[in-house]
Length: 239
Image (cartoon, rainbow, N blue to C red; front, side):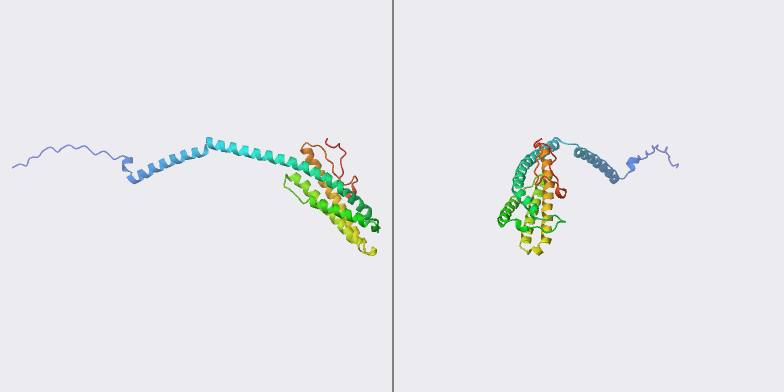
């Protein structure tokens, strides 16, 4: 009995899987996640880099606060300059007799002996009282601008130096005449330093007054440039 054979059934070839389809699912998901993360990061970066209305308002408030502080500081410094100038004038008038009296009683650096008894005890007492008062007046050193602080500290140091010169003179005067010379020379140098220190501070005081719109304010202890001390420039006061 013959075996029945039929025509083999036709079958279509299976299509090849695409490359994307051949990628493992985990890798595909990871790639998508990376793309999403990059997009989100870029968006956040743009937001951070772009100023917002709130940032602009904050900057404006900060600038306004700084401007207010600067105006208050300038106003405070202007008042300090006026007060310091008045203090310097008052001090200069008070200590000028001490400056002139010590100059007469003390030798120059290369001079010989002098008669220290030409200064009376009453004069010494008056000078000492003056210097104690002026040193006390210049102890108060409120902080101002750098330029004002320089003038204030210079005046204070000059007053202290002049007070020290007077103390040295008093100490020398109490010694026997034969032993006075070395201390008198020291006192003379201290006095000269005081005059020079004051002249530097007075020049600074003049400058800050000009800058503040008050014009020249000349407050010097002497009219001579002894020891290289500065003196007024001859410009009219307040000009």
